[in-house]
Amino acid sequence: MNITLLCYATFSEKAPENSENYPINDGETVSDVLERVGIPIEEVKIVFINGVSSAFDKVLADGDRVGVFPAVGGG
Image (cartoon, rainbow, N blue to C red; front, side):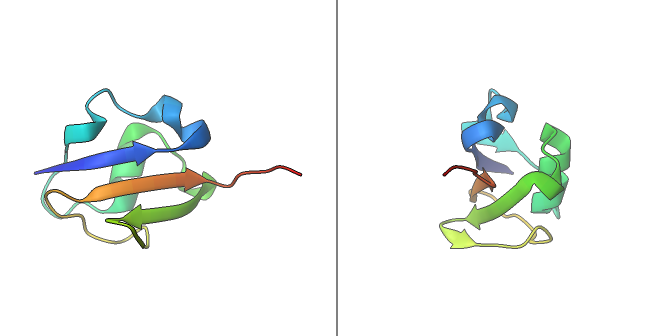
């Protein structure tokens, strides 16, 4: 199974080279994938799966598009 893993802002440096076709195992969750690529969950502000806000414990499916956003400061 494969997903598209989109890492935004400061997470872009953690995006794997094969992020457009990132392999996952059956039953893997968002948090499993984040751990594997080295993105600390406590730094994640928003996760979208197929354009819908999602939780870290959501089990991923083949073809999902996962977007991961950090908290962004500014002012």
